[in-house]
Amino acid sequence: MDSIEKKFDVIVIGAGSGGTMAACFGAKNGLDVCLVERKPKHLKPEKICGDAVGDEIFDFLKIPAPQGDELANNIKGAKLFAPDRTSSITMIDPKQTGYIVDRLKFGQRLLKEALDAGVKQFLDETIALDLLYKEKRVSGVKVRLKDGEKTELTSKIVIDASGLYSPLRKKIKSDLIEKDISKKDMILCYREIINFPARDEEIMDKDYITIILDQEKAPGGYIWYFPKGNHSINLGLGGYMHYKGKIKDFYRKNVFNEFVNSTNIEIVSSGGGVAPVRRPLWSCADDGIMFVGDSALQVNPLHGGGIDPSMRAGFYAALTAAGAIESGDYSIDKLWDYNHKVMTNFGAEFASLDLLRRVLQNMSNEDLNFGLKKNLLTASEILEISGTGGINLSLMDIASKAFSGIKRPNLLLDLNYLRLRMNEIADIYRKFPMDISKFEAWKKEVKTVYSKLKRMVIDIKN
Ligand SMILES: Cc1cc2nc3c(=O)[nH]c(=O)nc-3n(C[C@H](O)[C@H](O)[C@H](O)COP(=O)(O)OP(=O)(O)OC[C@H]3O[C@@H](n4cnc5c(N)ncnc54)[C@H](O)[C@@H]3O)c2cc1C
Image 1: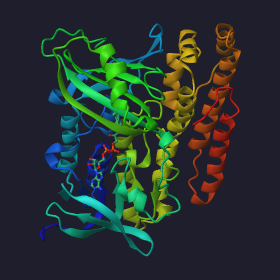
Image 2: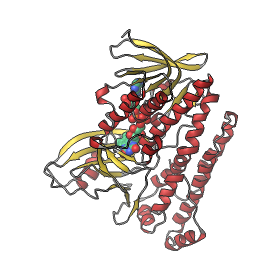
Image 3: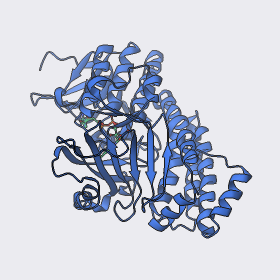
Image 4: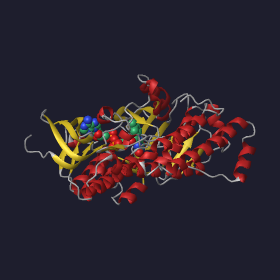
């Protein structure tokens, strides 16, 4: 493949939701962009997913929302059920709900947005193998092209959006970037897309996605039932990583058998995947490189939703790249601006939700049933936490909760303590330092909040 170009302003690795948006907005900002994807173009992205994406991101990026054959279903909100299924709360949140998409067609449209915006070169069936360095700064990537040839592509900046198992994050020579991610901060998922050709299956609550917390049936995660139009569903569950090998059995026994009554079904797609459920990497950038989406753990820790934040981060990374290239400085000092954008925006929210996730994972079914029944944590609080990363309860609110939770004073105290810590960590993230020399002191503040959680009565093992 001699005809390919090899020198760019920016090379983006991975044409998922994060990479396509980084490439799209890089090109829109006048940069020479090369987009590299290991899968063939027509299969991009064949992603195992719940297929739910919120409204807000499309307004934010000013690109069309899913429509036509990309769109399987419009969603008004989410219903969160307690393990005993008797109590539920309904959440209407523009960030998390809006559409259930056909993931392949949606992904292909995002790729088209990037190509139409003027991406200079798209290399599909091309695998990024390693990073290139010039004077300790990342200066490009080593790739294996479609025809098997290995070659080097150089750039001023690399944007890595190659997903949770990014090979580049593992190989980077950097003290800033974490290479190994704890399995405790990941969720193993299995899901099927099921069609009902006889149309004899009643689709449950077609306007809502249903989420069920159940520590016995989906330990450490949840069961989901997402309607895909009138005669199709996306059904799955997530759980702790150590259930590897068993997650499909859990799904068959605990989820499929409960929710699928018809025998006349067509299973359109089955498969597993892993979602990170932690706050973002401590730093999502270093000299000459930025990490976007799953590769940087930019996923909502509460439910693993990562389409919106990966697209948002792709946009932020492109803006930072354009500014850095204009100034002629591609060092971490200049790219630090990307960290600032991430941490002060959804980073603050995700750090706060990471604390909630750890507590929920350690609650028993009995506590979850009680907590949801007695409104110890209400839909509006969860949404406020999801939307802003923090909540402020009035004295009246706390008094009424104290009354409803009187039989479980420890649980109530723990949840109030948790609220305070969630506010505290969101505040720290919103004050993420612009100056890299203050980063270590900032990290120390964050770690202090995590260590405070250990004081809670709910035994935090994670
Ligand atoms: C089972 C499951 C259900 C989910 N459900 C939802 C949901 O309902 N809603 C939601 O918002 N999020 C959901 N998520 C999370 C969401 O899918 C991801 O957070 C999101 O897709 C991340 O996008 P990304 O662009 O960062 O990474 P990815 O979509 O993983 O894209 C990475 C791309 O990089 C390519 N690549 C990898 N390595 C290389 C290489 N070496 N060279 C070149 N290319 C490479 C891959 O082929 C891929 O196309 C779910 C995740 C799972 C596992």
